[in-house]
Image (cartoon, rainbow, N blue to C red; front, side, top):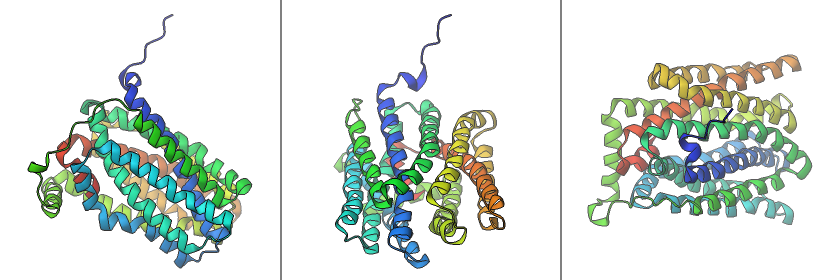
Length: 360
């Protein structure tokens, strides 16, 4: 019996290069993010206030420079931006294990590194989301985003559990070196892509930066779908990534007494759920539409977050509640992310994609 040939994006060589590089990079980033938090807590003895500063260093640059980054991305070719951002992040993160090895690592170093990495990640993410529609056809965006997010989920399944193991074997600062290496691999995979990228708008057609920012904001404000997404994303970023993301590792270590390996296993459960969400997202969106899939993703994700502060009592109950949170929340988040990203990419003109992605 003949095997069915590969179809769709499985036959797209340049997409496969992007896919491979991003899978490795996401694996490294999951390991690195976990290791940075544990470096602050276990190695440098960071307080809740210092952890909030580390988190602020990671989040604030995106708020301050997001719209400007969108203008730059729309003015330049996107793939070179992504390559430079990957190399810059590798260099910045490489300082942490080097400083730890030299015995000079301080919490202030984490602040500076996280600011640099945050700015470069902002540039990469805006360019990345704006680049995909230039690499594949718009009718392939849902498939492409689903494949990218599915392998991201696989990376999460193994990444967090291995991160806990690496931290215990190598130490938290030295584990961050793996993240730096993953960015080098990502940059190499992007450099191997052969498909020519459409040129950006010529300088004669460009307006001042603030006028271009206003053009992007005007589109978001006038389009009811983009306007609703902006409100949802702002709320999620403030309360989810901001407040909860800042304190969750500190809560698990200081309040619940979890060790790195246990936390890694719990977070890996979220990766399994996210993989299921990535598989379901494309089918659910095609069957019920983007709106319902997006709505239920947000609702279930919000419910899952409530399980974190409820984790208390006997140790088995704590683990059960945290496992439920990961299984529910990460799957819901993946459905939400794939639906939202595909909707933005398919409904936004290419010349404004950078600014719209930056504002959302």
